[in-house]
Image 1 (tube, one colour):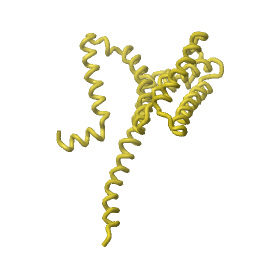
Image 2 (cartoon, helix red, strand yellow):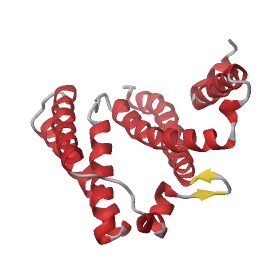
Image 3 (spheres, one colour):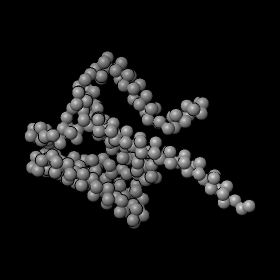
Length: 211
């Protein structure tokens, strides 16, 4: 592999992922004789995949720091239950804020044990995984959680992922926005800073040499 291709792949690794997704999609389309690429199926897949993608983006940032968070699924579940439980009573706006607050609380709880107490992130998030998974199971066994027709008509509900724009689920659009922002922050800004530091260090070393 030539150095130019290697550098391009290194700077844009998402291209490989996109290429694999396209190849796998084509394979499924051939196997199902076109049924897999129907409009309804693609809308359903895009909605589910977008939610998982947004969580994966956050998980990638955690892994990039040398840690791991395996409680992300439970955090997502608690946030969803909080939103669905409160939205019919207080509206989608306050329910969304409450769901975000739950996510911040659980993240801060993990952070206290990992950053301040020095415990391994794997063990800490394993504990919170089972803790909030149990809370979710207990809540769903006692109550029913679903978006009512009134909630589905609210603007905020449709804006954060419940609606569609030109046949595309809004959650997929949010996933693309998050991907672009992370691309600019991680693969552009930070790599430029790394390149600048790499160029400056030899100059500083030369200036520090005794005459």
